[in-house]
Length: 532
Image 1 (cartoon, rainbow, N blue to C red):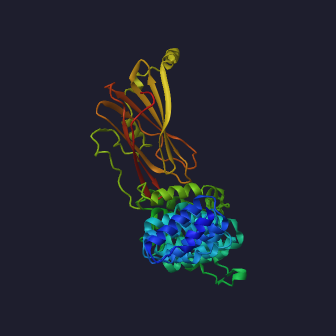
Image 2 (image 1 turned 135 degrees about the vertical axis):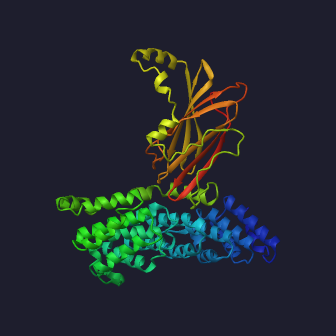
Image 3 (image 1 turned 90 degrees about the vertical axis):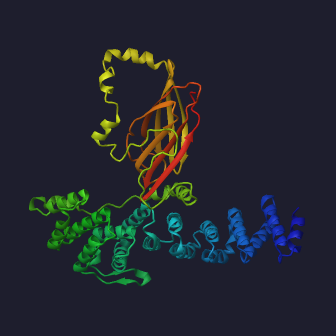
């Protein structure tokens, strides 16, 4: 077999599509069967020749094939690394994406500096919808193969300056964590972030702005000193206090600044004044502007910070504005794979991940009874919770302890079952069913939502629709945020009554939640339930 394949490959002409098709099939056979190492090397070299072809179809097929064999012989594929990196500049988006996937697979400790540089160059021209995945992957390989802490911090800062608006919030947290863990980088990183923020305002990436404000607040004393980076030869001159306060003031007045950004800026301002014991008048002037802010967060924060200037609260000021301890980095490393899987689903279009904040929609396209139009953003409000529950529950439910034996007898007539109804993007929905044997048409469904990713799911909304012959009551959820890392289960109870026993119970569900500034919308249909 090996001799025959080698002969066919050696004697086939490549100046026509028919010959290329034969070569491609030979490559597939070589990689599928147990072939000699020399023959596999020949097959990979053939795919490398395909990459030099001007036909985009052949180049796409070659990149796709190399991605499937790179795990078997990464050294052989590495020989064609220069051609693969050139494909990142191809006008065809499909070729660029396949080359990006292959480049990510080729990264190791020996070539990470070169490949990450190419990935960051590609990040500049990548479509906004692909930048989130690319940033997550670059962060993962930097965390795994970085040659030294300084290079790691410089790479993360460069990535935030290019695509900070599309980065996951965990990448900004990782940058802060790496800076705080290396005391030798406090001065260098703070000076670098200060100058980047100063140069790029007002057109600065939000994530970069947040990291810079955090570091300026924590290590403002390092800005007043000259910082050198040792063997690298970079020297940053000391910055005056007036320049630091001027930059904070520019951020507070920037039209791009969000409420969170201004919260970071006011905290940084207070820490600077507390540590340096200068600039109290300027600080009070800036904080006074937000005392009457329409944002409750900024108003409360400003009022509390202003109260810390009182003489009787000087000790409290030092304690409240003390330097933060180093953050843990383990969660960012251990959960990168789950973040990549979630991002991959968003890129392929399986989830509706958009940077635009859409209003929650309902299931009006169904000819069913829609029960899920309650707004969940006020689920924790007592008034809203009262409206969503049955007002007669407290009147007719027997609460006498003497009735417990009856409840125990009734519980014996209950039939229980559970099944996994939905799983996607790190979110799992498990339904626990409880059916009364005396009234089999009635069923109570407890929906358990679990978040397996490393990012909280906020503004959670669950909607359900059933056929017209089914009566349904949807209770409010136990919370509107599903915590990350499977830390807590959010529950929501559905009570159904199937009035036509000959017809099965079916349900259409819709799940909405926010991951950072992206809204995720998922729909699914449940056609069968275990207790039917």
